[in-house]
Length: 271
Ligand SMILES: [Ca+2]
Ligand SMILES: [Ca+2]
Figure 1: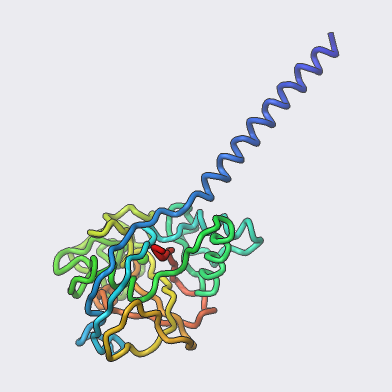
Figure 2 (figure 1 turned 60 degrees about the horizontal axis):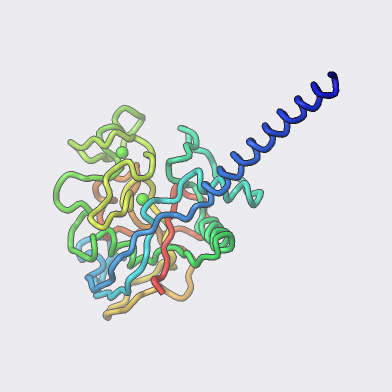
């Protein structure tokens, strides 16, 4: 009888082990699922803002081919998978902690690049960062003019809003607008823009592929920025952005190794 009892116990343990392994497998495959991309139809548009900061001039014509861009910012959960698979430390944790469905930030340009190298190898893909021109084109909903990505009306993204006033905030906010998030928000929680892309301007500002430099004076096609440089470009605004820094044409620049409050999203060529 004792033998049967041990056999029975062994079978139960084996079943539990198999179930656990299948759940683990499922979690693993779920977390490695491909990031959702949106196909952007290319076209011509005017990039920059004549009466913005000096580096937003000259306003110049840009022509873009079709491309894909990430529907969402890369999340904390996605970036954690990369860190765990490569024995890399997570970035400095914000005071409100890491939440898996919020965007990752506090990463350098080189760290964003390392993530993309890893995901391309893991998924046999050709993801890249968006170019600066692609980013502005999508913020302009396909190249339309406009001071803000949401036009002249009320914002639709997570920026410095009335909810900031409940925190120790002494800088500017968008008066009369409350998005409900003084800090980061879950990606995709606020409405997508007209092209179906979320949080492009708000939530966290984002690294793009270009080196920082002066804009060209002539019309350009699929610009990639200067060939080399000392700073990389970041675009979009963030949960900390006052109205001036929410402008569609605004540019940020930081050294590629500087760990700053920027995140990123993926892009990809159509061919
Ligand atoms: Ca906000
Ligand atoms: Ca953003």
